[in-house]
Amino acid sequence: MNPPIDKRIVLLIRDHHIFTLAVTRGLQPWCATCFYVYDEKENLFIFTSEEETRHIRDAVETGNFLAAGAIALETKMIGRIRGIQFSGTMRKLEGAELKSASKQYLEKFPVARLSTLFLWGINPGYIKMTDNRLGFGKKIIWPS
Image 1 (spheres, one colour):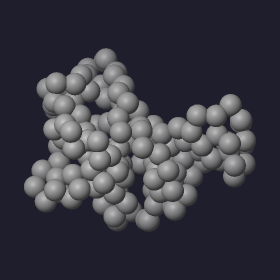
Image 2 (cartoon, one colour):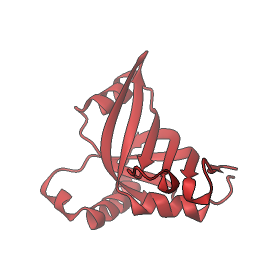
Image 3 (tube, rainbow, N blue to C red):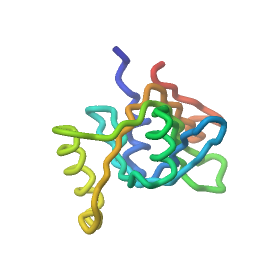
């Protein structure tokens, strides 16, 4: 069992709502920007994306559900740079997990009620946070 995730990592994840998702199809990488909700209890990034999108097609058609993501604070001030990179396994959410995820997603993004949700999740197995406020290039790694 992994140790608890450092609260500083969780706070940065919760302070943002967009991540860059990266997948591959053979030797072809692809990135997409997605709105997300983070379920701390389940250590789960929840996002919506239709099955016709390139990043979902690449995962489903190849069976390669390994994914990586990045969350970044955009700033020109070196001392304030903060960001997260993570990797894990992506999956389509179903059943009770889908019901819980839908509720969380719609609470954060009520406008999503106007469209059909195709919810996916990523349980990260590795997270690296850079936080220059703690010192230049300071990294917090999970699991440690």
